[in-house]
Length: 228
Image (cartoon, rainbow, N blue to C red; front, side):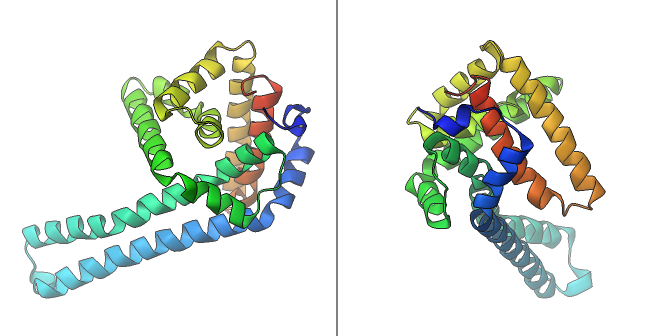
């Protein structure tokens, strides 16, 4: 059962206020994601430099270059996965906030994440595969799956449904509910606004626009009956 605030009329002001209450949490999520990604990139570069030096510098063969590329990517892979796992909290924190009515502090956010990390990794892999397959099938199916993301993350974090059932019921909730297409329209419009703000500010605006939009979309999902 969602908190009473979740079903109230969504507005940008309410989303902004919710974001302000969660600034420390959102800031740490952003910093943690950036640091983890940075470490991964650094390891990739270091591995390539080591292989490059061991293979004779500029005289290294194509095979050695390929090995350096593969080994570097393998070294970076765990950090990419961890960065993606932490980054999902940008949407999960608003989802948990509206489900419980609580302000989600830093400790609570990361406790929720580490309580079931394998569930969230599996959910992420399933969603990514579904989006990629959809994109390969004339693009539009992939976009349709991607638009289910906020509802899917809410169900993955706030219910005990198996991840496959969470994806299936999320898809049904968005595209078969009475006001689901209203939700999709608002999602697309919100995404366009976030894109414009991000481009106009050389990406800096995304640091605020993305989390504010996450709070707004979760509120819209409850208000339109896509989530309950």
